[in-house]
Image 1: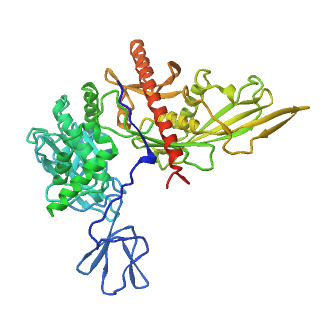
Image 2: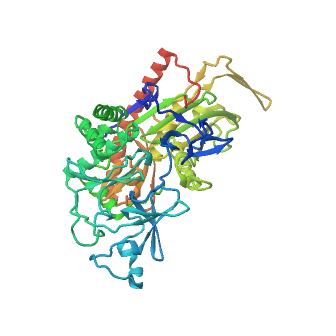
Image 3: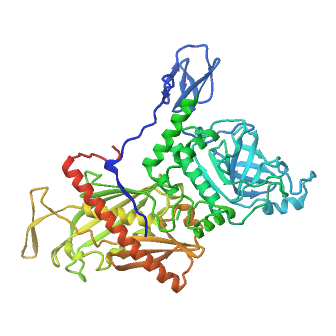
Length: 291
Length: 292
């Protein structure tokens, strides 16, 4: 029998994101951040009448004399060394265009990938002609930001065995400002699956695969995923969406907390908004206790 | 249909999930995502509703107007649908991008509501050959997360349930001119019997199995999908979308599946609508806009 659940919007409780720290205040566009003159203007700010004003809606951040405003919601702004998950949108001469949730498509040059077999050699015309064999349009890949061009577009590289084409799994898109910058963005979670938390807000949840296998990171495994793995993957996906709905920073610990909090529910129950918020807020409480 | 790229491996992952009866969000093949509804959301419309299936968010407003019946159907009223695909819902709808989808949905709705089993147009007639009600049903897609047909048909149904048409106290024919007297009391109004109003149900075929309530990703990796209009125990329309074809046996199974599911969905919907009505009456909640 079908499972149908209809809620009434008039009975819906109102949830709001609480900002715990009393000093984090949200600035709106054009608002004066400081009236003192001896500050430097950073990202998300501009100078007018001698005052530093906010050009985006967000939280002010001060590093020594530099004041910047981190927007609450934005497209991804890349930095060198960031781990990203992206999707191929176009193949042109010597390069792939990759959608990375930023304003402009990023590029992956054929010279910045490891060719299959791990050999280091000059790229010739033949390699250029067989680019589609490595990465097709709409394929997903993980990569690292190699360079940021002046217009803000990114140049990527996959010159490590941990980067490369992604196989079976689920992609989740969250706001890039929810991703916590960490040393490591590739995690094998204790629950038996792997996640790649892209700095660009794309999160890849997949079964654990052995990275040492041949193919330079371009091999794909299309065998069915076991039911147990699939259940865990979907549960982690629903947990990440719960965290994102509650504006909780997303990193390995918060995902695991949400996962543990969610264990008392069935996977599909996590789609209900009240369960979702409960899991998210419980995970948030545990993170706060930790700090 | 909304286009959302998927790589081959992702498609295979979804396909195996449907085979295992465990979809990408933990649902089984026959499960719907949680739905939400609210009626009477637009104060200036005679009937309105907002309906969400997960993140597919639909707003419907209805206004009745007095019109002349068409000569070949002198004792029937009229109903007209207009779907607006807002570019806020999906970037693909920008400019004229949503027009094709909008007209597809409009035609489908028109077809289901034209069936005499689904909607009694005669009830909209005031004076045969001279005056009838014409209902303008305006549908706005606020957000799209797949399964638009179902969400829209359910939203329209809720809005029609909420619709209040002013009561005509007397209609006199005076030498070719019609003299209508509408009731002065705004609470004195006619309502439409919503029980048999049709529900559209999208069924996607992925691999060898059929699923209900597809998400955008599932819509994109289905080989063929059909929209079935169900009213009570009867099929009012059936139409394939996004190309592809069905084997006769599959189609029969699919129809059985939609009839039982739609019947259950219909019961649940009417129950929720009645519950909301009771609550509104007891609490006297005043709404001024759907954004509140």
